[in-house]
Image 1 (cartoon, helix red, strand yellow):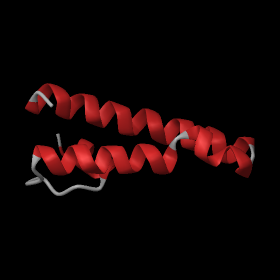
Image 2 (spheres, helix red, strand yellow):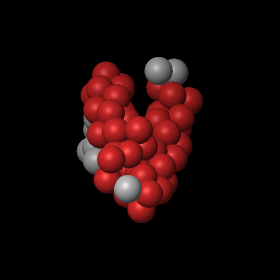
Image 3 (cartoon, rainbow, N blue to C red):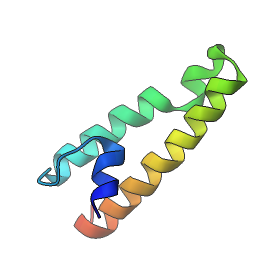
Length: 66
């Protein structure tokens, strides 16, 4: 499903290793604890983004057994 690639900002021909690296980078960037100092509004946005990122990565874990 192309929306999962879009969520992670990847092209459809991305390799599993690239998916894994991108996932880790995005988790570090959007983890709610890392934006805690920006206030509750940004923390809530980060929590929603992390949910999307995790959902997309779970799809790739099933698809590629990563």
